[in-house]
Image (tube, rainbow, N blue to C red; front, side, top):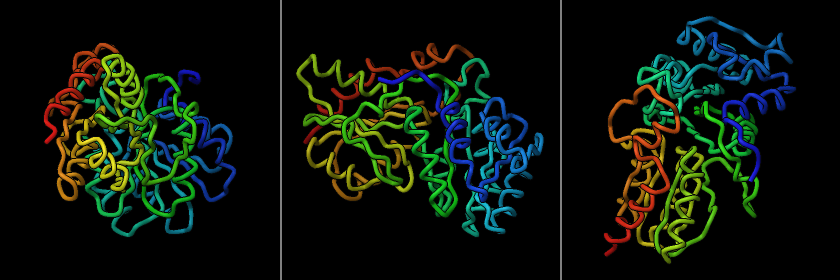
Length: 314
């Protein structure tokens, strides 16, 4: 297991690392020390633009840069990019399919004390319903770095959420781990139930698998870092081979990973799918770890959901 690091910090380091490409420009809505675009700004100040608290304008500026051949990265909290900038992302970026990468930092409940107004639990849902939008939620520092490299090389609009909380880096220890846009990653095999997770719930799912193993239940763990396009092959294989699925996300259960998995399973290979996430309610102010406990985003709750899914097998 690697060092603990937030995906926002890993993102900022990666953008700086790969920022020697002169086509890359970065725009910021006055939160560079939070989104970590400050790393890029320090190294490439001539290609960094702080537009102030004007997220909608920032998205439109990025679209303009993209029409000239630039790879434009936009930064703010997920609540302000996916939320406040939705209209501009839809009409100015996705509709003409421009090469703009929208980064939503401080996503999910683990913004913590900032409370419900800033805890964006709708970003994945909002972004995945936009035609042609690629949507990502890396689970750790290693995966965040790989995701940055991938979206730089991908020509088209992307949204990527990053988080505030430092997380264990796990994907760098998985044998055969390979990051590819639109493809889930099998982190652990199992025959009894499959847990498909995204973001920080990947680490919680691995812990849950250890708990289930002690009870003789073998859980398959899939890291779904790309929410759209969703990897239908790995989902259908899991449905066919394990017969029961649990999804886990730091997001509203409506419209996010769980909904995406249900759409695939229902249409192609019906199997019970139990969704674990925020149950269509707003967050609240509190320490990140306490909020995860309060909303049930824990290994222990995943164990219970896995048992429930198994009990529903045909």
